Length: 328
Image (tube, rainbow, N blue to C red):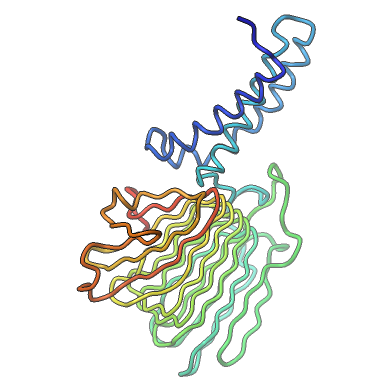
């Protein structure tokens, strides 16, 4: 039997491309392992080097097979929705010793306050605080200092444009710490590019919550003890966990493209998920939900005191209800 070496590289690429999502869905490899697949990129250079060294020998194809296998692994991780790109293009992580570049505080009135956070190359933390006070503290490199605009009922914080570096640069990400008073109702708008976030809205009333993440790492949106009227989330290339409210109804949409989304619900919460996408995977059946057409529901949802009703959409993505690692 002879092998057409012109097609061998393509065969290896396709084989691994399909094997990675299958292994991740079956639990044979962990999502954490998959999320670090991009770190294999040096093997591409090694494979090219091997091919050049062996180009006049019977083993000249070995380098090409290594390159094909590496690309298959990285793109397979992307299809599995677990490729974490949150550190790619932003240098190293923020450090506790980084200087403070922004430190502002204020208070809101009694109406609804608008919060807009537009962060690039940042590690973002949002946490509740008593009363009507708010604060924004940012540490990190001087060229990552965001601008902050405020009014009586609005705070807008935006990263400077053009602060993304190449993957191997010695730059640093900024660290954002935001606190929001629990006596205020909010319209919350978050846009995160190439970073990670932990957004804890416990005890807050959020009339509308819009969040978009592009190339984000291990991020959390914690709504367990929050009251959220409307949720709109989009994740493009990344890993996001959402802790769903336990004591209030919630409607909204979650869209994921080449991403992994975990959904955590407390026992007794009624769940209704509509998933019309054809290129997404989920564990809803094994998690105990009942399917009717494109809708998954908790058994006995009609008697549940509160219902989470979400439209799920996406491509090359996975949705996991109550992942073993949790959402906190």
